[in-house]
Length: 138
Image 1 (cartoon, rainbow, N blue to C red):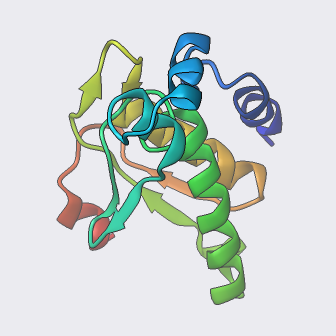
Image 2: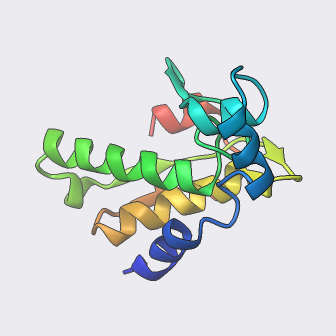
């Protein structure tokens, strides 16, 4: 099981939270843009999944928000499919990356896989960039 890396990311959240300066700006600000948005709004879930830029804060895609979302999704799948731990999940990724934040679709895929594996759910992981229809049809 891979619970240690997941726990480490949740506790230390190296690329997920705004800096101290960003938090001070959030506390003093009144508009929802930039750091304020990162602090006080959450991501939207669209027809193709999470919709947000990669970066710090709860309104962006980062290690923490990916782990939290995957944990919730895993719970939902466990409740919806009694044989999830036999079936497993299929995970693929695209070419998106955001070097300033360290985020990338490939990195987020590995974090999501670690969450599912830590819960005893087998993961069938594509090894290279994969178009979404290939993942859906798997």
